[in-house]
Length: 533
Image 1: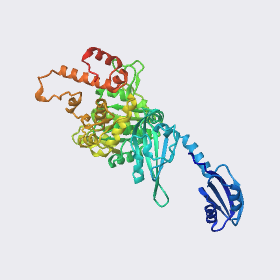
Image 2: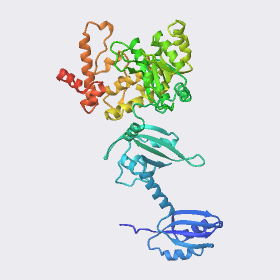
Image 3: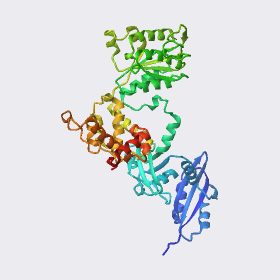
Image 4: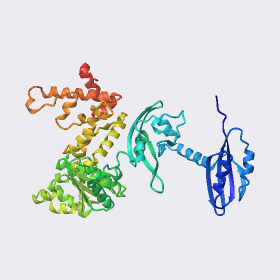
């Protein structure tokens, strides 16, 4: 049998301010057997306004209640209203929350849903039901991490992957604890950022050919010291020398310095070790027409001219021949270049940044590098620390590499198990960040599950063991299998793993560093021997 519905009355009461008004109203309502569903008092100057929602039993005579209410001393006016101020505030807040593109979910100190916006409802698959006031555990969530915030354990940018009736959602979740003025925890809120939106936004604001200090990954003291110093000298025109092992990101530092230098020209990198002496000289300084056999008829501008108003980055400067070092010294001192075969000196306005993985001071002692040039380029030295000196940054770097890899291949989000992370920490990293990137990309290809286990973190000879059970060939095994046969076996298994981990042959080709045609040719070559398991 259905119970009769209770009736409610919303009122605005205006009093001349005095002590005891709230107690008088509450006493009267108790005497009339009327519950207080909502009560809010606003005191301004000599006036007190009370907003009240009264809940009466079925059949109550509200006229009698209002008549008795008017007998309370100092009551000036009584208004019946349709909407309480709290309802208006909640409605405005909900409209604002629903207009935000991020998901927002808030809970009180008992774990009950206090606020939830449209995007969060969609992500959590609860569009069709009222969830405010229900316990967070009743929602469709992969974990209950938000509840940890009630124990003052906030979290930032945790990757989550939910499958709901509305589809699959991949997002970054950040949870914050809510405290009152006395520091007591009264609730928590979670903000959910869609991974695809983050990817599109990062592409829009940070084109792939630009790099800034904000793009650098790491919080360890070693890397933060290098970044802080580089930012300080970014706008200076003096030469910068970057020292560090291979794979520590020296070119990224140079690019970031250029980005914050305020220079309008381009960033022009050149590897001094990659070109023979004659070609390196013509690339740097250019040449006039007919300067040598094969030269262009009209001549060619060198990279110092190309980099006008910008930055030229001389990577591996220790490999520059001594004869060119003398010319480099003159360019730095005179700020002019002379093309090969020419007599005209061309003024340049170029910021010079050099880099090397060698000890230039020792090379100076051995007369392998000019002492005067060494001091000219060492005005602002920057040391890029090896990965073994910043192992606390490994989890951040791993997340960064996986995010870009999974986004590029449109794969489900992957993460590393604690055992896999520990294996990364124990490695010595002779190849530094470049090696880490390769290790993570290989692990992402070989692992068929969202959680990448330690068995897929491979170094050196371990690689063969985890590629579909391939045995790493030790030196003593030479002769048991030919090199071409071993290469073919590994190649087939790499291709099979890439096909399994991607949605199309084009994606697999990109992952393997092949053209689409090259991959198709290999698949045709191996035919039925190419396993796709």
